[in-house]
Length: 160
Image (cartoon, rainbow, N blue to C red):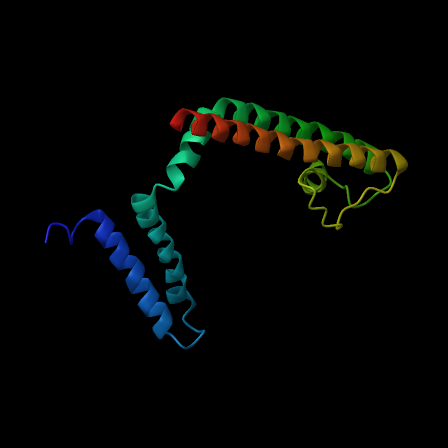
């Protein structure tokens, strides 16, 4: 009885109940009840308990947090500076850059290399700046990936 009331068992039971309720609903009109699907994410706790999958990831994130935060700070700085510069370059001739926040939206999509195309620079200098921002964005993600890879390498080296 004590085992049945443990937190792990209660999470598993809650996850199973949400699955049964979800499978028994045939109508799409019960959207609130369908949100119970998210409770199935609780099974990730059971997976972690049994296989310890997330522990190495968390330990690497904790160990490399200083480097990751420094990189995040650089990314925020690049985002802010590039957004303001792009605003001053494009705002006089491009109505899509009507505020610094719209420039930040453009800069976010450019830095992450998503590039939705809803806001694009039209001037020559704006396009040149866009090229630089896109290259910096690629480098930023490479920097994050390199820091995490180094953390995993050190973690696996310690385990051996």
